[in-house]
Length: 88
Image 1 (cartoon, rainbow, N blue to C red):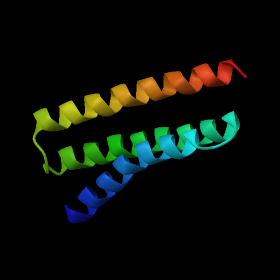
Image 2: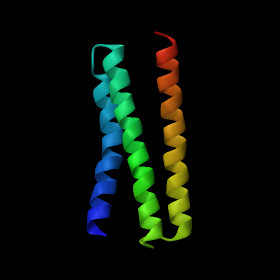
Image 3: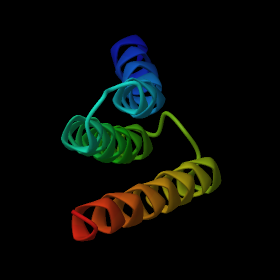
Image 4: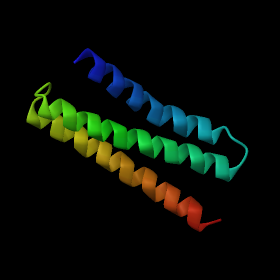
């Protein structure tokens, strides 16, 4: 449980960190690369939430709420990535 909690926290922080770091870059290509990494971290969080649910480390309601938040975040980020790629 400790290892999964640690990985989940690390991946969650990585999402925002990659977005911020990408914003600080001087090129749109670099920004997109960091957005892609952030999207990968969201998928990692979703998988870890699935594991936590299967191992019954969290109840179904909490797991569902968190999974929905991760999915919404992924959709918004994917939309931003698509928009930036179509404008180049």
